[in-house]
Length: 221
Image (cartoon, rainbow, N blue to C red; front, side, top):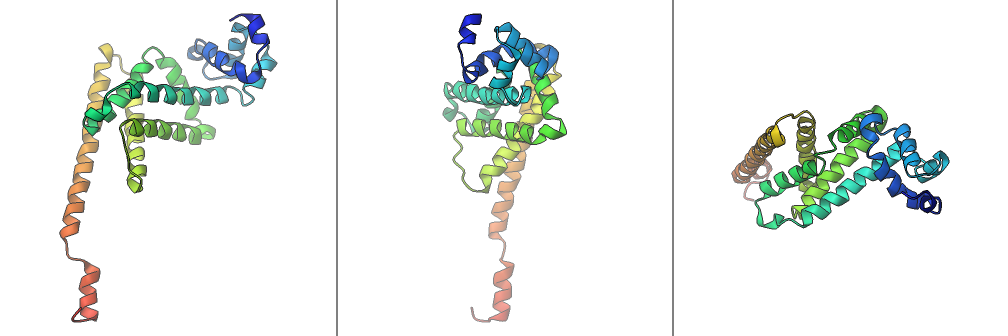
């Protein structure tokens, strides 16, 4: 990037160029201030300017990156005909799309997870996975508003996390082992949901204990 151009930009305007420049350093230096300062040198700005752009340091840059990833995923999924698919296929496609978008950036993803696994960043990591699950469910046309809204996202967060970790260590051609693992995880979830549905149906036909006790206490009602 032209040094004169960056010199004329505000710290806010420098955030995106810095984040883009960090991309080539993160696989080697992780999401660290070293990677941030190397990015600053790449685009021709001083370390203090980089610090003004990201007062929170590299972890703030990582948060911006995660938000950008979710936005890009939402845009990509919006171009697909998800509504025409079965719900399990919508979620499968959503997870697969997210991973395929980062097929050439696995080490950067691994470095990000390493940071988010630290005790001081666990809350940030949990929120990031939850937000990604929310993006996927919204793209899948989820309209739930009750407790199902939470349980769907919690379940998908667990599935996505498991598949993500598998993918990071998958050396199979074109990640075929990951896609098979993803299918198995989705199948497991569908079995659980089917069992829950059957249990709800059975419960609806069972006599109510409260009504039974009420009849004992108040005969004739």
